Amino acid sequence: MSDTTNEEDQKEDAISKIEETKEEDAISRISKKGYQLLKESKVSEAKACFLKILETDEANNYALVGMGDAGRKESDFRTAIVYYRRCLEHHIGNNYALFGLADCYKALNQYRDAIEIWEQYLLRDPKNITVLTRVADAYRKVRNHKRSKEVYLSVLEMESSNPYAIIGLGHLHYDFKEYEEALTYWERMRDYHGEKVDIRVLTSIGNCYRKLKKFKDGTPYFEMALKREPQNFYALFGLADCYRGLNNQSSSLEFWNRILQQDPRNKTILTRAGDAYRTLNDFENAVNCYERALNIEFDTYAVVGMALVAKAQVRYDEAIESFKRLIQQDQKNPRLYIELADCQTKKGDKRKAVEALESWQQLGIRNNAINEMLDKLR
Image (cartoon, rainbow, N blue to C red; front, side, top):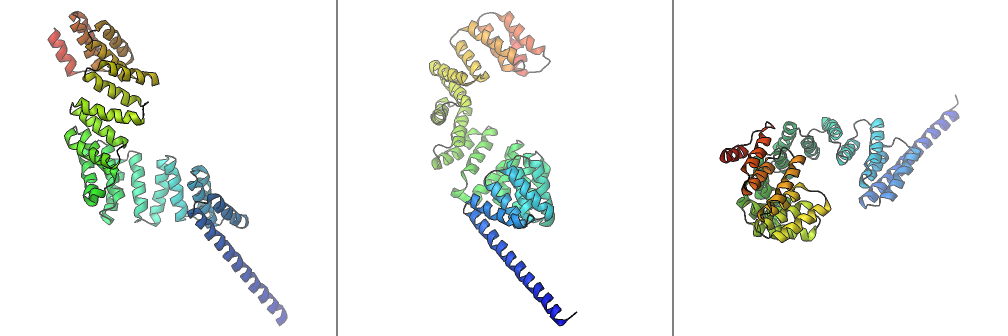
């Protein structure tokens, strides 16, 4: 082979390498432009950049992840999953694709799938706090208390004041009705941040006290939340319910009505307001609230409220019929039998009252209040 031929071959190789470098540089520029456009929320323009790359290099990891990120930004999670999966087929273990894919599954409430992907991510990056808190959240969502707590605590070992882990542990214990434990974590957040603590921490602390029936201790936290956001639903609801627990119906009613100003068709709040009016012997407004609730949709509590108004107004026959109908729909609600028996007793028919209570006992369910009432009647 002549020297001329070797020289030509070398030139061709050199030119080929230069062209490859130019092509890589062009792809790199387009890719960077696409990600910059994504940051600026110009999603359509970003997608055009990534698709241009994929026309010449269908396995390009930056373009495939970019298309996944674009889908995620548009909340088109199923399309995003397709691109992340394509990237992982060609680039096994790509952290960006794994992270995006898990986040898509989380957004679709497919927490078990999200956990599987995040666990794969952690095999490569076991101390990534962002991923650890996400996987702990997902375990909480699938009710795996033990594993969720383990992961949150592992985060706190690395970063003792990590807010996501502390708040997550608060939610975890709250979800499992461990309110005292939940309080310890949320109060840590309050201690760390003082007056600047997130309003959701204040309402969460208030809710723990409310669930523990320590209503007086809960009210200051809801009041602090309301000072910041006067229309905050959770603060208004928490205060109303605390005052209800303290049997301060007038104050309770003030906050139920403040919620109804924002949401006049909230069936649950209408029945709570009706109950407050009824307890205050304002039967006209009580009935109005119950009827508004029933006009939205059938509500057992509203019907019970109407029956209790009839009972309070000595319309015993009407109340008795209502309680009998309610019992047919909800045979295992002891309160209905007690109210029915009380109406019959007040009407002077103890025999029927005894029969009503005995019909409960025939269900084979023990209830001390019913047994005590039955003993008194006998």
